[in-house]
Image 1 (cartoon, rainbow, N blue to C red):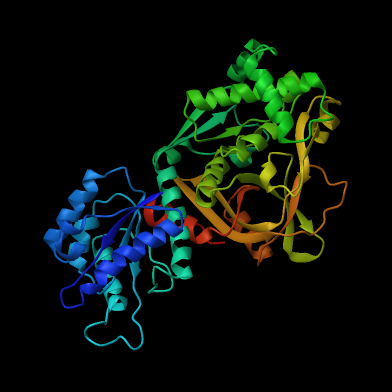
Image 2 (image 1 turned 60 degrees about the vertical axis):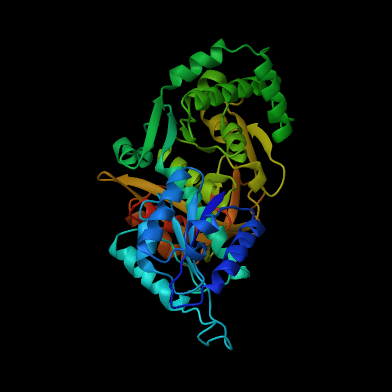
Length: 463
C-alpha cells in the first residue's frame, strides 16, 4: 500500500521541525512495509502546507497522482494551518489519518515547542465543519518512531483496504435461496445503492458447465492435484474427487467471467442429489486463497467476509452461532460443515461423506465435507442484513480458545470466548440478524467500524 504524506505548518512555530518529520514519517512507513508518496520540497515553502494557496498546490499534486495512493497521512510536526489543510485534502478521495507530534518536557521553549496537540484539534474541527471524513486514533499525539504509531498505521491500512474494497464490489449469488432458509433473504438494491453489485446465476448454468467438462481435461487433473494437496482426500472415492474438481473449475470460471470479488453458493441439496458431492471443501479452499465464499447463499455474510478479509489480510469464514459450551455464559461453539479455510484450522482437515446428507438421502451423496477444528486465535466477527433499503452491520471481538470439543462433534467447529456473549446473542436476535456470522483472525473491530461508518456511511447496530 502507498500513503500520500501531507505536512502541516504554521509560521509562528519552528519550521525546522518539518525536515525531520519528512524523514521520520518515510522511515515509519518503510518500517511497516508501506510506500510513501511525498510531495517535493520545492512544492511549498519548507515542504509543508502553511496557506490556502499552498493547500491548492498540494491538491494539484494529489490530482496528478490520483489512483497511486490508498490513503493520506496528515502529519503535524507543529500546530499546522487548518485552512491550508482543507484546501489540500477536501477532494483527496481516500481516508485521511491525522497524526500530531508530541511535545517533549524540556523542549517547551519558543524554539522547540510544537503545539501540535492543539493544532490537531483545530484541524479536526475544520474538517468536521466541511464534513470531510477523517480518522484519528488514541493517543492524541504520537511520534512516528514509536510502537504506538506502528499500531495506528496497521489499523489505518485496514481502514483503507476495507473502504477501497467495499466502494465497488461484485458478489456472486450462485443458485436460488434455499426455500427453507428465509433467514438469508436480502435486498439487492440496498447493496447496489452502496456500489455492491449482485450477479445472480442459476444452478442450471453450473450443472450445464459441469456436465460439459471432461474428467480428462488438463484443468480438472490439475485441480485434483491441488485439492489433494490442500487437505485429506484419502477416503474420498476417485470419481467423487473428480466431480469436486469439476465443480471447483466451474466456480472459478464463473468468478473470472463475472469478475466476482466474493460469492455465496446454494450448497444443498441439488449438488448432493445430482452429483453426489458437497461443496464444503471447495468453499474452504476458495477462502484459503483469499476469495471470500459463503455457503447457503448467504450474500450478506459473503460481503461481511470480504470486508473482514480486507481488514485482516487473512481468510474469513462463515460460521453458525451453533452451540452453548456447558455452563459458561461467555463461551459457545461456532461451527460449519466444512468451508473453514485450512490455514485457520488447528490441524489437517479430512474430507468425508457429509453426515447430514447421508442421513437424509443415503450414504455416498455428500462427499466434500472438510472436518476438523478451528485453531485458537483472537478473532473479529461481523455480519450484515438488509432492512428498508439499507445495509446494517454488527461487529465484535473475542477469541477462539483451545477448549476441547468432543470427538463425535460433526463438521469444523471451535470454542469461542466472547465477553457478554449472552447479552450479545439477545441483541443479535432482537435486531433481526441471521444465525450466520463472518469471522477472521485478529482484532479489527475498530478499523472495520471506522471504514463502514466514517467513510462508507453504513448504519451499525450496537450489540
